[in-house]
Length: 574
Image (cartoon, rainbow, N blue to C red):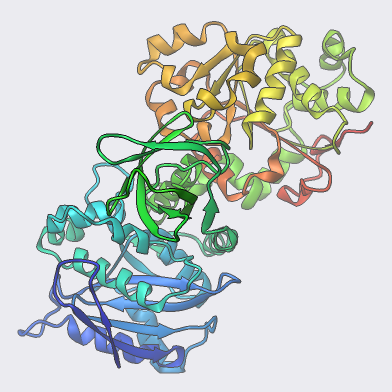
């Protein structure tokens, strides 16, 4: 047994008791926790039966520690990548994780439950605190939840705790995360929501799907853990406003100081003094930084660093929302054809992929394409034929210089001019999408390109000079379907990044009703985390009929789909 001092919140206790257990003795921890949940009359108390939970991991993604907490103590289990327990004793631990009488409560519970299930092989049931007080599936930060419960204004340090991939591997931070979760879950304000909310439960999901999700999530976590936690910000100049806030002029887009609750800013003077602050506003190249302690306007700044993580991308938020709904049994992954095609194919799916309906295939279709493929070489023309056929999935390999951009624009021209069919073209980067847009302009294809205000204003306006008339900034999008329809006009081809396609705002303002996502072309497909495709395919499951993946032959692996239909995989050659 040990103790951890608690100064993160102005709440008792100031010192937390910590009970340590090896993995083989996790059952003893489960028994101790279960005993704590028993009220004086011998029944399980609904408040006492709520336990905070948090996890940490090793570099290979295996679980390192699991922390369970009450509002006064933490029970810490050292896993160290060892999934095996000790016979009958471990069955007590197994029963505790999936209990329907006690409740595990954590921020990001879908992720915690999947990681525990994948590493230990046991089912997990719990409550996601991030969405407990939210009217939708959008997540609240831990700091916002704590503010609601405790009426505390300064909770900056709370969010800084909340990343299980923390490179320091701090057991103290892990314990504090579990304890804060317990404080929230055991509060009087949380009693009714926890009793009524639909629980996250891995038993809602089929075994092979759990295995797949667990593997994808672990791979994602390994990549996230490898990302740097300190970034040197390159800046041109700075000054201070009347409120003492620094106005920093960033000089490079990739290293700019962004507004993020998952990071803070360190400004170092030439005398070595360090000032910590938080980015509170950003516009174009200018970021406004508020400091926790006063900083002198006369300070000679030596360097600026961002410590921590960027905000989750729209794609990451959408992925987490889907996992939450699936684990609460509010959505079924297998309802989406393209999720099944890529990860969980049935025999019927195999038949569809191998023998697509012949409506658009054959010599008639090939002859009709001739005016649109005359400028292409043979391999490019064959790819366009495959893309515009009824094959549901097309994977295209081609090394740099083989004309992938030209081929994509030619297929879009066919869909637009021959059939007036809607198509979305997305990429990993804004630049790749911009290059395709310029090709479409040369082919006189009616299209619109959507770009984020953050990327465009003061940073990249110059690269869009040729296509300004076709460009729509995200801050210019109407908030209603009628306005959106007028803005899009007759265009049936829409271009954006994956992040923008994942943005919930595009759905709420009716863009997908104006131009439905029926055909999806993905450039730089191998540079996108494969897990991020899943929510896209599920989101558009009622409209999506075609997906075309484009990538470098050394990057885009055909194992993304192992079908052997005649158009399943195409190669572009010089």
